[in-house]
Amino acid sequence: MTATSISATQVASPAPAVDEVPLKTRLRRAERRRKLAYLSLIAPLAIFLIVTFLWPIAALLKRSIDNPEVVGALPATSAAVAHWDGQKLPDVRTFAALARELEAVRGTPALAAAAKRFNVEFSGGRSLLMKTTRALPLDPTQDAREAITSIDARWGEVATWQAFARASQPYTARYILAALDHTVDADGNVIAASEDQAIYLDVLARTFGMSLVVTLCCLALGFPLAYLLSTLPTRSSNLLMILVLLPFWTSILVRVASWIVLLQSGGLVNQALQALGLINEPLQLVFNRFGVYISMTHILLPFMVLPLYSVMKGISPIYLRAAQSLGCPPFQSFWKVYFPQTIPGVAAGSLLVFILSMGYYITPALLGSPKEQMASYFIAFYTNETINWGMAAALSTVLLAATLALYVVYSRYSGHGRSANKGR
Image (cartoon, rainbow, N blue to C red; front, side, top):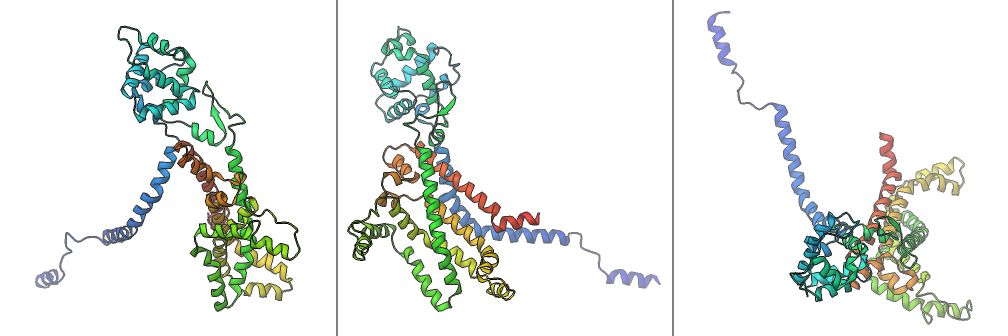
């Protein structure tokens, strides 16, 4: 090859650009842009859920352990007793800080809130703080400890300061323990609450029991109804589905009031039973647990039917026909071939109805007696009547924990959980 041909070849084939980006880098950049595009699409929804759902739940959980009243009104005294050994009376500086801060917050809502919180830990604590505040200011020439104990001798007792130290902690497990019928004694040990205060475990058991009964009633009524909807022709199925969804278009208050009219002593149900000669006197069908079950089952039935229907609609009838053609009786074909395929719908509907039942408030309040009130009634009571946000948040936290536990069980034993485990 001559020198002329070599130089021509070199000119014909250009050298690769120095700044050319490798293919792998371009692919990574394209993938990054695609992920950013997806993120920009879901970002508004994610922000909305965080602001309206996750943030309130986090604030609620914090409120169940928050204890800001005493430490907010008397910060210096609270800081002093935080380092106190609890064996003997605090030093003079702690008494002086108490007198100085009580005088500063005299007549303010902060003092009233602190006195109310102290009264929870120490019987008579509210009157003690108010009496001490009214006697201030102290004589500057007098020892602060002697001056305050002369106002009320209870300040000279170690038990008083132990209670004050518990009340002045910024965070406390007292509300969570109270929601589980436990408390903390003077030595800081967790003990069972007294019989006159141990009510919340019974309330939680009643809530879970009533929710379970409503879930079973909805399942007993919803399963055959969903099966009928999935097997009927489309026109008839759509008509029945409209009837199932009618409760969604009616206010809960209207539905509860309607059941009161139907089930009361002079209502249509009792009149019909008496007209048929089945009863001689009206039955008590309302303002008891029976009426609550009927109304809650009627309200929550669509939440059971819809998940069941969505699952049953996807089950091919060929499986039943094949089983029966092989000699399997109809009931065994249904139980062994068809029913196992509906388990995801049964689990989803039961979980949905059970969780909704645990949070019901209006229906038991209007149709039930005091013995039928669920945990949501006490949450509303502490929120609206006594303004005790700590107890309301603690009871809500217990219900939230139960809901999360149910969801974990559902995800573990549902079809998706089993398939994931098999994949591993």
